[in-house]
Amino acid sequence: MSSTISRQDFLKVAGIGIGAVGLSELGFDVAQATMVQQQLHIAGATESHSVCPYCAVGCSLIAYTRTQADGSVQLLQIEGDPDSPVNEGRLCPKGATAMQLAVSKRRVGQPMFRAAGGTQWQTISWDDALNRIAQHIKDSRDRTFVTTDAKGKRVNRTDGIAFAGGATFSNEEGYLAAKVMRSLGLVYLEQQARV
Ligand code: SF4
Image 1 (spheres, rainbow, N blue to C red):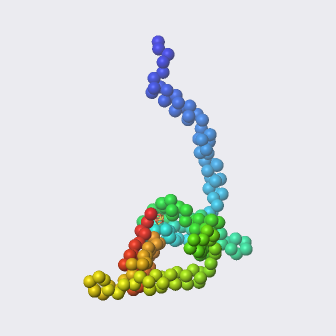
Image 2 (cartoon, protein in one colour):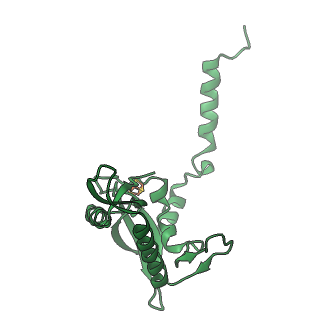
Image 3 (cartoon, protein in one colour):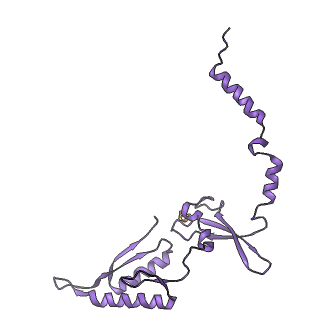
């Protein structure tokens, strides 16, 4: 009589062996699972519905917050909204990190400026940043504005400035931006849909 064990027999024995280990050994203890559920850090938190700001897909989010004893509101968690027909609870890697927009210590919270040829960044005010941008736009436009092309046809355009819209633009913001840029004479307009 052969003492060899078939592959099928081996799998049966192995299955029994694994079953004998028990669910608790594998971390599936029901009592423990209940305890973990009671300790969820979003238990009792306020749910606020929002939309991912990163791209035009517009995935729905749920933000969980809790008011602290000192009255401040702490953001606990952001996750996909399972009731959304857009994303059905899912988020892409960018959306899954949306919470970092609020809590990351590495996030730059103010405009930064580095002079041409410089090596150091400096923090500037929003007014300063907007004034600098406006001045650069005006200077470039004044320097490069073309009223007529080589054939004498009126064109009123500037090739010296290009515009790229952000992926978080709404329809209305995109429409407004395109109108403003066209009114300045820009012809190079692009929109970052999603990367
Ligand atoms: S960045 Fe990702 S999660 Fe956010 S809206 Fe776009 S696809 Fe959805």
